[in-house]
Image (cartoon, rainbow, N blue to C red):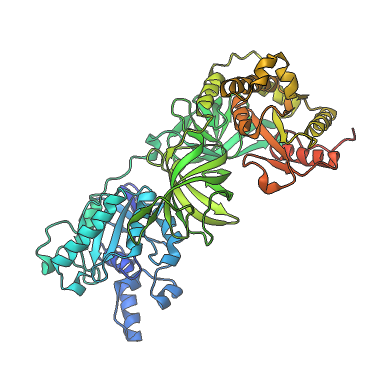
Amino acid sequence: MSAAPVITYDREQMNIVIVGHVDHGKSTLVGRLLADTDSLFEGHEAKIRAICERQGKEFEYAFLLDALSEEQEQGITIDAARCFFKTEKRDYIIIDAPGHIEFLKNMVTGAARAEAAVLLIDAHEGVQENSRRHGFLLSMLGVDQVIVAVNKMDLVDYDQTTFDRIETEYRSFLSEIGVTPQCFVPISARDGDFVADPTKTMAWYSGPTVLQAVDAFEKEPPKENQMLRMPVQDVYRFNAQGDQRRIVAGRVETGSLRVGDRVVFTPSNKTSTIESIESFNTPVASAAHAGQSVGITLAEQIYVRRGDLMSHVDALPQVSTMIRANIFWLGRESMTPGKRYKLKLGTTSVNVVIEEVVSVLDASELDSDTNKSQVNRHDVAEIILRTRNPIAFDRTQEVEHTGRFVIVDGYDIAGGGIIRDVVEDAEAALRSETRQREFRWVKGLVTLADREARSGHQAGLVLFSGDAGTGKALLAKHLERRLFNQGIGSYLLDGTNVLLGVDHEELAVAEREETREKLIRHYGEVAHLFIDSGQIVISTTNTIGLAEHQTIATLIAPAEMVSVHICPHHDQAPLNTDLVLAVIEDVEADVDRIMALLQERGFVPALQSTDD
């Protein structure tokens, strides 16, 4: 017995997860793997055997793993334990995930870190509902390397017919959800049959042992060989030390970056060149790789913020307000269309609603229900989500980290999922066009960043919406005056003024789709020009409806838009609204609220209000 489980970091390592229905023997299998690969601390097994003898109970290999008193009392695994074992081929980090239905959230947490899985089924009990649910979860989380171990074969007298029946049934189910297991292995974890070594108990089986099957898993390619993805964690400035640079901080999740690389931040499409790589108390570096947390400075002082995703300009992520996703719901209340949730992906946090429930899998009946209008607790579903603002992401099969997300309901994580595909929204073509416009834009010797640095504020658009007669035009004028009084470059761009040069006959037929698109495009391009001159543009118009707000936001990119909607009922405000105001009664108080929002978003510095 070795002194301790030793992981040698110059050898290949792999994360695997063991999942299965409660009491199907996961902890016993893990304990047996630790013992049979000589991966326990010296004397640990003897200590547990001595305790069992004193307590007058039979030793079980599960006791080597279950350390929590609550688990020992109830005989179930609650948390996703991490332990280590090694074979001649590689070192393993093994995650023993909970099987009880009440602890599925923990199981998702564990499986999300795995590269491959061992799925356990009790030969005596057969395929259970959670066996199917766990299989779907592995598929949903993108774990596509799976072996199935049919445990407790000793309880069915090592019967081949029982094994074949379980394999046929479960293989059929896995094929329904797109999972192809590498093999089925009959085992007895308690007795060690076909765990590490073959035995004579099942002469009819000629396949690999569990250890042999695990060693056949293929290691994922190194993350540094993938596309560059660095979610922005924060942006720091150390003005007190006389350092005027913006340091963009984040963790390089995949790929690598070097000084001199041209990078783009999505979804804003702001581009710049990496000037330096910063870190505390380390030698100056010229490169950073996946797994490193670093800060970078940029040659052009563009404005980026938490939630932006940095990549190379030739390997961009997807950007949309619509995604097709597989989701597993754990919330006590059902996930329903129309209700707003929070989607968190990397460092991005954005409001989201269900656009469509495509199908819900009934794990107990193997049926996909395409008629359900909501996702209930413990359901797995394919849905289309619509986010408040465009987000940057990848399909999970392309870049795992930027393809996984969680859903927050109130203050609780209520669900998790993976992005299967992008759904083109109404602005997809326009977004691509404006991205190319930004790359090709002919710049003078004075850039927008120069103007923002001199003026001390960010350029952008404040767009007011609401029914006619709500007072939005009055509020927009007072906001312009407040900004001007504080020395901030601002301009009221009323929609009427923008459209004065448009033929009145065209205005009369603005409901026609083609003509309306032309008007919106004209409006957005004018706003973009004013913003590029460094102004905070304040705009309101009855010609542009709520449906066009996202189009306007796309047209002014990479600048940002703040949307202020005026209506008496907050729950009737559109999803993409930043601030909802009731019918205006105190103009100055409402302007105060808008100024606070602009300060929060970084548009303007925190200044004291001045009397008009």
